[in-house]
Length: 167
Image 1 (tube, rainbow, N blue to C red):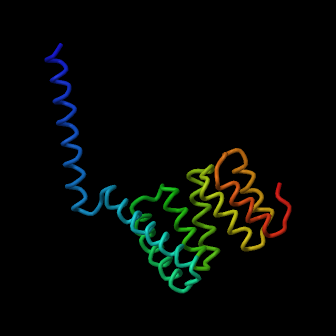
Image 2 (image 1 turned 45 degrees about the horizontal axis):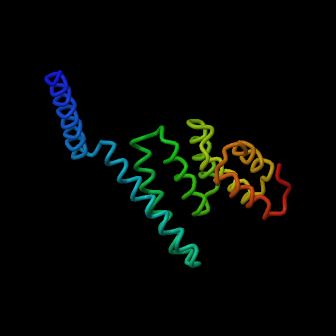
């Protein structure tokens, strides 16, 4: 019994080492998941910094960071076209830089991949409020209604703040 357990452990550890080795060798070629993640993570960090600048009303600086983040998300998207989180951020950074048509396209692409993505539904709803399409914003709110998530209450508040009936 001990020999079987030791053999299994050796197999598990050797396959783990092999997997770790394959990740490191493919990352040096620039095409691994790790490189996608780092681009994504760098871009998310820029978005967070931009958000802090917005709170301090440094909107021009924030807009520049959103643009830089967009470029990084674009590169990440070129390597991973089926990631709704990347599409969500492409939409978000587009919206934050005033490109509402592009933002909507990215959000809709993301919803084609994952229709119940809470973040995309909330941000698309916010875009619809910004562009005075309250009926469409309410449609996004309806999608989020039973999620029990903060995105629902955040979108609901934004719609209510506009003085519009929420369904």
